[in-house]
Structure formats: C-alpha cells, structure tokens
Image: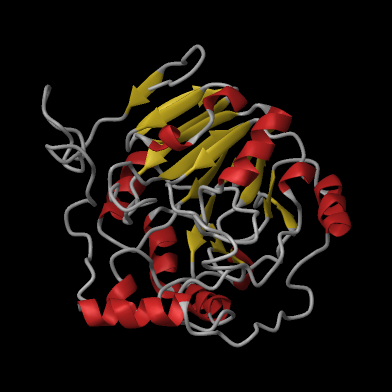
Length: 349
C-alpha cells in the first residue's frame, strides 16, 4: 500500500504464497505479525547459548580489526568511481548498503552509514570499517529500499539526511514505515511478499526472506522482512536482504525468473546453532543465488561491522570457494571494496 502521496498500482503475483480469497497468506499470523515460510530453519540454541553470545558481542572486548589494504576507498575515490562508470552499475557502501543505478534511476538499499548500529549510541555494535561516503555526500537518490527494521539496516540518522536532501520514494515491507518521518520523503510504499510496484520506470517486487524483525522490546515480528527484485531497462538485480537459506528461494526463482545479479549476504553466521534461522553461511548464500538463477553474485553483509563470532574476513574466502565449487567462473563472484563501483554484468545476447 502507498502510505503517503499518490500511490501507483501494486500488482500481486499469484502462486503458493497466495491464499484463497479472504484468507491471510501463510506468512501472516492470524493475530497480527509475520512468520517465515514453511520449511525454514529455526535456531536450536539454548538460553545459555544466547546469554553467552550476548556477553561476547556486547560486553567482552573484541581485538581491533586490521583492515586489509584497499578494503575501504576514500570519498574522493568513491565519487571518482561513480563518475567513471556512468551507466548501469552497483556501488557497495558497506554491509547491505548499495547504490544501484539502473535505467537512469539511482536506488539505495538499507543505507546504514552511521558509526553504531544501536538504539543507544555510543553503545552497541560499532563499525570497524568507515563508510566510504557520508549520507550527506551521496549522489541524487530516487528510491530507498528498506528490507527490515534492524538497526544495521534501518539507520534513522542516515535516512533523515537522505530524506532532507533528496526526498526520495521509499519501498519497504509491511509496517516498516511506522519508524520513518514521512514528511521527509516522497511516497512511501509498503509491499507484501510478491507484490510488485512500478515506479519511475523500474519494477520493484518484494521477495520472501527468512529472518525476523525487532527494534524494541515488544515488537518482534510485528513488521515484515523482505528482499527485492529490481528490474529496469531490461536489467535485473535481486537484493536478498538479511536471510538464511530455505526452500522458498527455489519458489522465488521460479516465480520471478532468473536475476542477472544477486546481492547475497555472506557474513554474520557463527555460532551456527544461533544463526541458522536468520543468517546464511557463504555456501548457503551461493545456493540462494543459484536457485534464484543468478549469473553473477556479489557478497554483502560482511567487512563492515562485527555482529557475530566468525573472523571478519573469513566470509569472502569461503564465498569465492563456494562459487568455484558450484561451477561458477571466478569473475562471477564479486567481492568489492567499500566504495567500489562495478558496471552491471554484460547482458546475455
């Protein structure tokens, strides 16, 4: 639904997730809120496992992270890269934040550009890699895509700056607009899974993800989490959002067709017993891209902020190895520097 301004048509794509007339889709809970698709994995960890994990992540001090040379481009190099690749392209700004340029539009996904991912900065998880661009230095933004309400994806200070400077449209899952200052943006659209929005020459479809939502003490799974398929000018990008692997991705690939480029999460997966229900391993990320029909995959959700227990620079090593094991050529496994721009893969003739 459109939550501000004049709405454009939303097209619901039929299939297994749709229920009979008058019935809720399966992922809608009867009393309100949402759940993951059938067959999705769930955490098997004990309460003690969770308390131990929270102590390590929030209280115990991690050793400093040494950044490899070239991992983060400075603002000048980032802007120069945008100028050097003026056509359809992606630019990784860290974590799950990309600038996506397709068909003359510029979209930004989950613009977390602040230092902390926390309701109470300076407490909580902190970036170990700086953002290559501040929110105030972003180029013109036409559309903001928000996958869910976690602090490392829904960064209100960065969104406030983007809204004040560009007044973009916002596309997100059901209920997520409650966190936004609607006066700062153009139209805000909330989509259910498999709803498609035609906006400014792009088709944007909200796709299932296997995760959860929570921003406060009493709002777990009250708003919907999702990924997005973006199609414009004959090109397609699938942004998975935060997710683990589940059978629903094979259904999504069948319903939406193959994507040229899949942006897949390769970090935040250990300890496995805790994360299996919400974050995929690099190997599972490759399987997600494979069943989505992606010819090229780009790893995201790593190298920016330490949220879980794996070593910060392990994910791309495992991602590249998994791509080779799945039969992909090396140039189909994209591992970008923060701030790096890369042209969309060559179209298949």
